[in-house]
Structure formats: C-alpha cells, structure tokens
Length: 149
Ligand SMILES: [Cu+2]
Image (cartoon, rainbow, N blue to C red; front, side, top):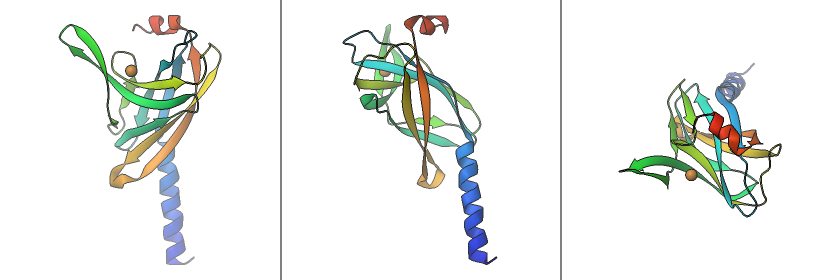
C-alpha cells in the first residue's frame, strides 16, 4: 500500500468515527393546532469531541431557528442565537425553558404520530462541518407537561 493511500484510508476512518460520536437522544416535536405556524423541537445532543450546532433544517418548515429562553426580570423571553456549543462528551439538553429548536412557517399541521425529519449541522474544530438527520416523532402537548416544562 502506498503512503498516500494509507493516509487517505486513515482520514476516512477518522471522519466516520467522528460522525458516529454524535449522539441524538429522544428527539421529538410538539404537536400543533390548526393554523399554528410554529412549533418547538427538543432532544439531547452529545458529541464526543467539542463541536457547535450551527444550523438546523427541516422539510416540514420554511425556516428552522435555534432559540434560547432567558429571564428578563419576571419575563421569560425567547431569542434567536447563532449556535449552541457542545462541550466534549457532555450531553446538552434542548428543552423548553432553555435552548431549543424552533420550526417556523410550518407547511402543515403536526399531529401525533407524524414524523418530522430534522437535519442538524455541527461544526468541529478547524471549521469542518457534518450533518446528522434524525426522525423526530410528534408528541401531544401533554407529553411536554409530563416532562416538567
Ligand atoms: Cu423558540
């Protein structure tokens, strides 16, 4: 085997390991009522190496935003952020009340039992990007309540 070829194989192995080291646990999207144009998506994200979630897309919505909930005095406010840091090996919970993903401009009502594909784009050190697509089931409003939101 030539040196070049073995280096290439080593880099391919490295890339696929990095991909396998991103874990998405329990993704779900909150069901909507008719005419509702936005909904939240929630999950736990874990990356073995330090990474940053920089972009999210879904065919179910015109746009997908990354939001953070913050207290302003007595008021809970939501603002768009340009990404979420994922510290190496630590699980980051995207949930109501903290960071979450917002599907904006829904193309149709989301009903319990539907599945929404969500693609997460992660940026690693050196600016290398990778994307992970998950199929998030739609859960009823009561599901959120049971999770203690
Ligand atoms: Cu939001």
